[in-house]
Length: 392
Image 1 (cartoon, rainbow, N blue to C red):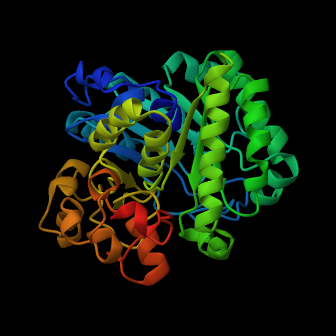
Image 2 (cartoon, rainbow, N blue to C red):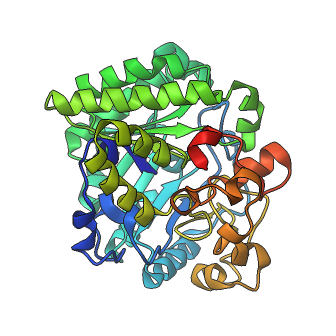
């Protein structure tokens, strides 16, 4: 994650991180990405089932019963292992996680074990009653997918009325006092809606918005041709920076992030170098703390069937199953050659990545996207939009 508000708009300074010793167990949630120990934030796909038909779903979900989902008992054992391992956040995702009946029980168990609990949802199943339950549990955050305004969103989600239901869910969370935000996956079919999404988060007093770059996996593979070009990406990132700064300058700050393309970090720095060199130096220090993509290090995924992956998108390479070995043991087992290489990826990336001056702050970007596009997981990420003159 690249915090536009944190970096470009100055909401975070290096001193804010250093005063906590950069320990993930001590850092507040908005500073976790700058931790030094990089205990993994874990995405647990609690179910594959979903009530929508999203065209870019990385899980390829349908509204059917899937076999082999972890039981409540197995889920609680996973949570206890993650908490003991020091994982600071568990992100409960799907499919649509609210379709799992024991989700409140699992969320409560994680909170009781000291973990920050986040739910990633399409928002359509949120009711006043469920919001009250999660408010009492102490949920840290609810991220609601909203891929454009009404017509665009409903087309992406494959169900008419999905936008109105999602917006209702956002309002319910907001009114219940649960921190809620928008999750927007960018591509050519919806990029024109980004200004309207900024208008929406201001009008509806939504405190957070995450703009995701497209990752080529699941049904998202079909959208490769709809991914933004490098020039289009630069224009979109500039737009997000401009709109975020506008909110700050008008006294209506929002937490705005871009996700899944760590070229955004150097791009922000290079823009700030022209606008405010002093702040640019501070941002560079924060980017070095962040270290860029951390699949297999600072983020991991447990699938509905217990398989452990480097991140939620990279589903063709499992490191093991939590039904057979605890997550913590799997995560630290570098006898697996891929796991070992991910923990030392700078030695293995190829092409322009290998000689890039931003490798320390980008981490080589997304290996899953490189593999999907080229067949070679160590090749340069095709979504890196930095010019040759910007990386040497």
